[in-house]
Length: 449
Image 1 (cartoon, helix red, strand yellow):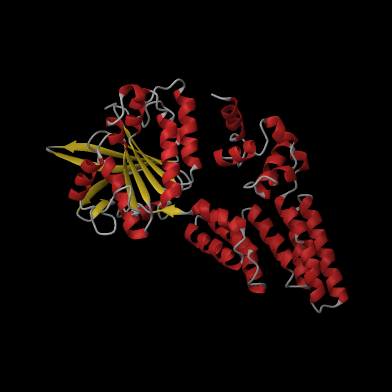
Image 2 (cartoon, helix red, strand yellow):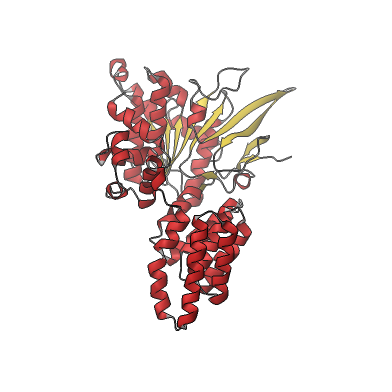
């Protein structure tokens, strides 16, 4: 592992830093943890792609005594705006002064951790001036921090009514809804904030965090809060004959047909023609997603790496860095075709091509580089042990993945039935039952008890 890899590994251990941000920081001149520790917020924000929130989070990590509570900071930042608005409002001098006194007292009490007294002072400020936006905002934030989400939402609702063009309460209202597991309503709030202010980075980040990719497996998406979180790395595991490839292909097929989403199917063993013949028999050959060739800019692109292997000598194959080659290939297709979803079929085949010196470390960086692409990746992996449910050859894959689907077969009498279980899915409330999985001319479906 190079020095750069060692540094990146240290960076991504810090809160809020993924591989993409770690690379930006490294490229921006921070070549060690020591460099980051010495950096100011302004130094980090100067790097394109590093926003002020992340810079402050990093700085606060190294200098906790200098950290300012985000609610206090927000209130203080809004003070000049509040003053400007006060000047434009035809209020009496006495009312404005009294309002300000109560607001400042509430903020001071909040800083000291005296939540109840702070709320009481803010209520007095609102008694004097019911349209004081800063008082409503701080009150909502205090309630939200104390877990009183319904009360927080009431404050944000009043704010929205007072000033419909203020995008900030929409984001905070969405955060409260998200904490109540009302994700679809929260997303509506984030979208509303962006309608008001298209430069609202918080709303955009929240939407990206909560975007979902549908599987179009009947009966499944509604149990996953609408689908798989976008940009997840998803392991699809099972033994031979559990229809892993068909399951993944059907997802790409339906995303292409229903959502016009571009996808790439990387097959490392089965030839493209064989794969397409098999999928056609399953009914995945409708107009709009049938011409699956690389040279056409269709909704779906199938790449046949198996053909590449046949055309390459053994000596050349041994010299190929397959992990980085696949990353580069997907990068190119994202750039050329704008693909948003990729299937890698399969991890076991990739292992047969690759000689690892340090598999845990190399796989860690492989998964991080896939994640860094900013697309949803399905990775098919074979389960070989007939007795144990081991989802990765090297014992780290299931920890590196964001989600795991397990397809398994069970024999009863003279019949084999297929079941689907969700072993893991971050950012999602899901059951752990195994449900019967069926496939017919309409595609895949799960059967609920």
